[in-house]
Length: 567
Image (cartoon, rainbow, N blue to C red; front, side):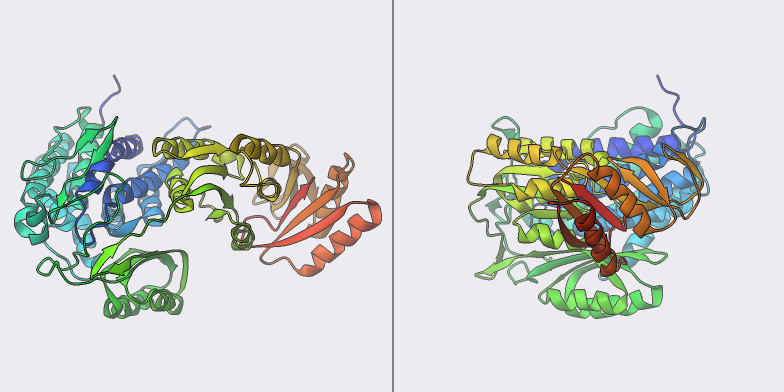
């Protein structure tokens, strides 16, 4: 049996994240089913799960960087990674607030993980979350977080006692939320976000004590979602209307607890924002005037913005004026008879979901009919993002192209999750974006699914790939010792060429690859690479290799200055 921690060290933080993800995975459908505030859109459990998944992945990345060492990462590194991962992966109103709670805790736990630090961390977290919400409402996750912090106060020196007290305080507060928020009382449920926080605190109890706490309360008023038909969930009555298992929105917006019959904003707008603090203060004021459910969390130059508005363009423009918004997600709710209704069209027969390293290739793949997920430098997508993309593709059959060997397990997990939701998913193990382009080029939705997957797999497998990268430090490679600033030519994932500049290294890489034959060269240029490089490389291929064609694409903001494919 593993030794139980006396304080929250890095290993305990890792365990906490893992257990929280498991807990939210178990309870996701039930939390979705009781989601009636601020919008009855049936996705709070899913949003919390995806937020914690991103936090857990960030912590795992810290541990992966220490695999060759003899000691675990520092606690400060683990908690900061947890907070950062939650911030960049936060989904929806509930996930955004949870990210701020974790950020508030991390600011204290980075200095120590004993009982006293945990008490202070819970207090700071609850206060930070309230400050992030433009108009705090009692009977929500904010109330539950405050109760957890208050219950943990005292002189108890033992960490185990503090986490148990916080969890019990949160449970008690959750049970009272229907009395505080009228819409919850009418629906006969507790707050969905609060229930998710109880699950996260329960995971903390298990990580520290080794024992899982008693679950509950479930939904309030004695009502609970019941599994039927092999595990699907029939939801609870929301405002007198059943919530179906697929999470479709069946009731109007419930932004105001005193007025459940009024209409609500038409769009949910979410984005990450790079901006200074003073710019964010002005942004809050502007967005607050545009809509409601405003939550802005983060700091140190990186923020996560969430708001419900009627004018989505204005909300994004406000972000552009404040700084650099990216990962922009806009969800539209069609208004019908004064109620928000998610209109679900008949699913397509087949779709392709592709991970791309930059905006340029995203546009190219979208034009080809694919649903895209952008993998930004240093921010690989989590499995939840891939599952979300599969859902957005809205098809009975989906071909998934991860375009990165490091995403193999992530993509496999996403495919497995989508299969449990009734989608037939085939994972084509593409290891580079140029392989994905080749696979997408032969995709034919009108032929049989298996035949299409075989053709796409064959096209990807027949495409050799390379990329140029800039060495960050002196290092041993398969091509010799490189120095910081050297240009590295990686062929099929291994360093094969070390050069002084991009053009010469690119020519050498092309020569090595074309020595084995080829009919088509694909070049994908990074954002800062001039068109003259593409012209020079095209000329190099034309002069040295007869009957070899070259195509050039702009990849936009991507990690590598140049990607190369040979078919």
